[in-house]
Length: 389
Image 1 (cartoon, rainbow, N blue to C red):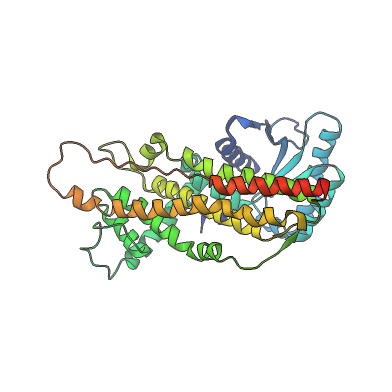
Image 2: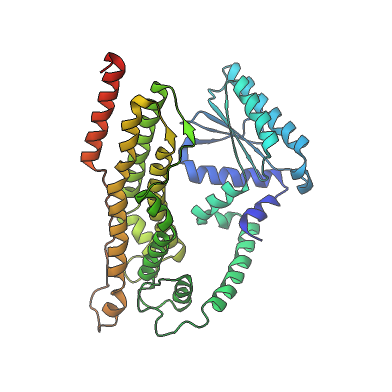
């Protein structure tokens, strides 16, 4: 049973609230306000200050109730009504309402709840067991506080280990630890053997496999398919959309800078002379790959917009802002794998007086020429809209 399924089986409201609070504190820090559940909270189980979001948390005391749409709708509509009342009375400044549950929400229930939120001027958001499971993966330190989930994880890991042993059958032992693994089987064999320098070989393998898994998206970026899934006819709305998307690509690029700090690398690979953490290495590599995929998706989503004719030239060039950071990322992965391939030979070269250290760094930048052309086309479109030429 995976972690998400285990969360769905929680039937003690206090334990579920404790899990939600731990996850939200880890994800949002001081931005999240914990509300004492033992007091009369009027439907307020927590509050996100920056987003002005009121939070409601709920799990049924009987797992069977998770399939009863009537009960789910009644609970959500009731808690949402309390949030709207708090907003209207000016007790809490509320822009959105977040419902966290350990069960999924059906389309019919979702539609009713969203409609109720719209009438009350509150945006509705919900998060399910997949959100909580994902957060526990991102913050493994939390798992010690929930022994039941941890026990399940140990059981899962034992099963995975058994599968790994089977998966590594047939791999030449002489190959293990001699280069960055290029297949899942080679990676599993590396994790079982853990030779000197395995941490860096694992990181290189995660980068290599992650990049390979996204090659179809990369080919679509090089030769974009003709898809238009959303039409924006209003010029100001389309311009605002572009502005928001521009901030998004800048945020994606800047976020990568923060994960290559020396502190983060040391947590993953370990200080000199200390073994690293496989889970942190995989998480670090996943953050890098996720940024790459995020940039690919950003460009693809822009190309799916059918904009007003006056802004068509701007929308045409906007996705090209992704070209340079994508090329830089691909070059980084290829170069990193090439360098990390050399580690086994370096470590077997004789006695070393000093610990072997490798610096991993990646800097992405938007193409200034493309950005300049983007701004020129936007200025031209605004002039044309205002003056007709």
